[in-house]
Image 1 (cartoon, rainbow, N blue to C red):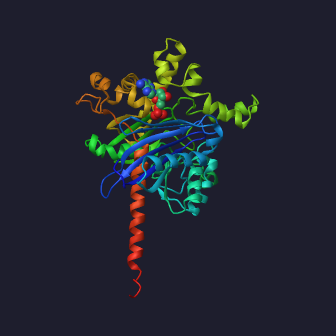
Image 2 (cartoon, rainbow, N blue to C red):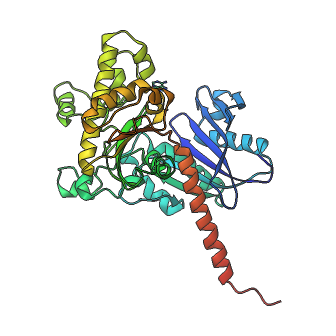
Image 3 (cartoon, rainbow, N blue to C red):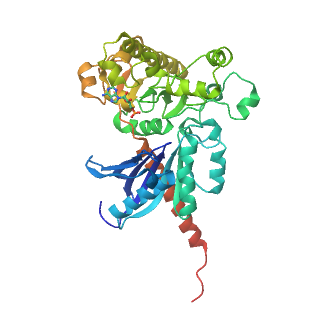
Amino acid sequence: MSRGMNTLLVVNAGSSSLKFCVYSIDEASAPTLVARGQIDGIGTRPRLRARDAGGATLADQTFAAGEVADVAAALDRVGVWLRQKYARSNLVAVGHRVAHGGPRYSAPVLVDATVLTALERFVPLAPLHQPHHLRPMRTLAERYPGVVQVACFDTAFHRGHPEVADRYALPDDLYKEGVRRYGFHGLSYEYIARRLPAVAPDIARGAVVVCHLGSGSSMCAIKAGRSVDSTMGFTALDGLPMGTRCGQLDPGVVLYLLTEKGYSAKDVEQLLYQRAGLRGLSGISNDVRDLLASEDPRARLALDHFVYRVAREIGSLAAAMNGIDAVVFTAGIGENSPEIRARVCARSSWLGLDVDEAANRAGGPRISWPRAPVSAWVIPTDEEGMIAEHTLEAWRAHEGRRSHAHDGVPEPAA
Ligand code: AMP
């Protein structure tokens, strides 16, 4: 990166890790990735690693547990590293991934004290993620009150769902207090929706089911570039089975665990988030690579179930859109596993999906035969890139307002 450049920082904080990306920005173009890194093992075995956009190692440092005891200390470490590495660059804004924007936020928002207070209220809606996402914002707001911060929500892209899709069949007071089908992975879906006109212009205005299949998995019905429904609902537990999360479950199972089996709420949470999904079903692994490599019938069952559920949801989301023009695969499994893609498409052949196996092995972008009535695609997602784009847009708008306000102030008389 040349010196003296303006940069953006994108932050994605977890319980014991802080992922970050650095982008350079200029007057006109989209943000350019400069470095991608993370501090993991916060409070236990902290380790800072970073790579440049080409994958070359820029940093690999370990620290004593007490040196990086919490997220605030991790942010400090990242700051120290950035100042050393890019000494004369100018950090103009920080974009944050935030799990939940509640019923209120349908677009990214500049962070101030009022917004932080509003986002705190959504902690009960995403107790495993939201507190970690808010912590770095609060730390930065306290230490660097001048820095522009932008919150980008996993729920925002889905806020335009029609009410019939947004509802559970529960009394209205619960809906009003926020028990709704929010949907997640919105930054990934929005990125894909923005890429479609360039990658697959024929389907960009059509009805597309995007399969975000990774350690967390969900699917989204996108019509004319807008989300109309998703397999995830109130929390990121719903819909497809995932690496360790259960996906769709009869709530009667939870009642049974609580009343008949003596589970506590914590026990249930642990089961549904950590001990279920591919791991629970196979008893072997949460990683599709391990399951594909295994001869164990339980591994086969877990993958069969996963493929079955993805294919079933393609039909369900096609019904939500009153038709389907294309299926897009993305995220760790969707981008890297030709076998899973082929199996999902084979189960969906009744819709008109027909995979060209050579194109599928090559990784796309188009993996269906040209004559197939419903096309299939592989498009790598980039959630951090989407946050960077939003952050740049919000920062430019903020700068525009500032200079406009400044223009309106009469100059003091000479
Ligand atoms: P993500 O959360 O999007 O980073 O996806 C991570 C998951 O992608 C891992 O847990 C693996 O199950 C899966 N994955 C990554 N590479 C492959 C691969 N080559 N074949 C199958 N699954 C893969």
